[in-house]
Length: 129
Image (cartoon, rainbow, N blue to C red; front, side, top):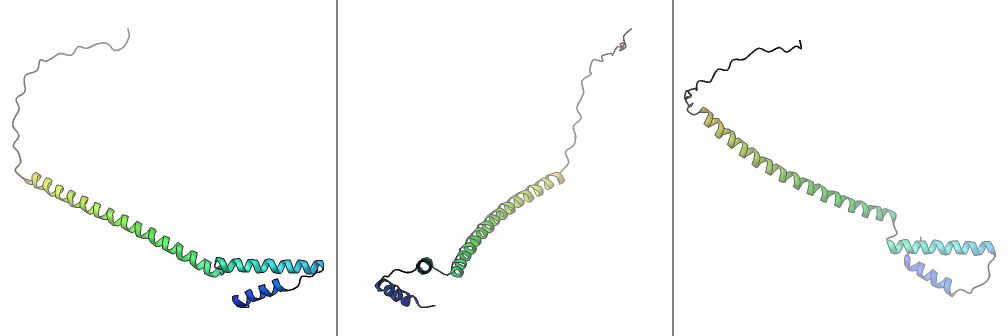
């Protein structure tokens, strides 16, 4: 394959060459060659190498993946901090309640009950007669 500078020279030579009528199949062949040259030039302008383009896309994808992973790890670290704080608070509450439960046991004070009026239940018939 010729270097890009040579392509430009060849293109200039083609433009300066005298035009003459070609047979139909030769004209088609020339058209195909012209289109191939145009495609090649477009590829060069766009980066050209599909392998290079694939590498670039892969790099971009990897960068996005790393950013997502970093965000995910950051969220997990925040959640760990919150859970540790909650755990510390619950442990402190547990020890306070345990201490309070181990403290002096309150003596129950007897409560005097008022005499209730005894109501006598009466028997009734539950079956129809």
